[in-house]
Length: 134
Image (cartoon, rainbow, N blue to C red; front, side, top):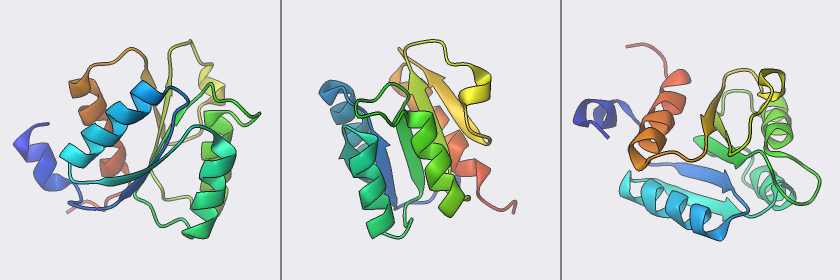
């Protein structure tokens, strides 16, 4: 991540990650930790939603894979979260083509596979969306 972009981002905060692939989940944890963020990771949306309600929406970013087990897709999780906490930035990921109408408003779509640089830039862009202009 560029030094300029890093200076503009919050230096701390919790990120919720929902990804059913354990290797990709670990990649998110490591990347977020390197960027200075803590993360709560889940392999299904129901567990993540329970956590989000318990912490009363106190997170700075949601990253969700579209294809999740358990009946709640990533886009639906983001939609539900934004009904209660509309200012939480979000990133939806998928290795498949996702109809643009399925992607919730103000959510950034990141197509798999992506590079670490693409992931970092997308995280930066998502966090910038909700910050007031200086």
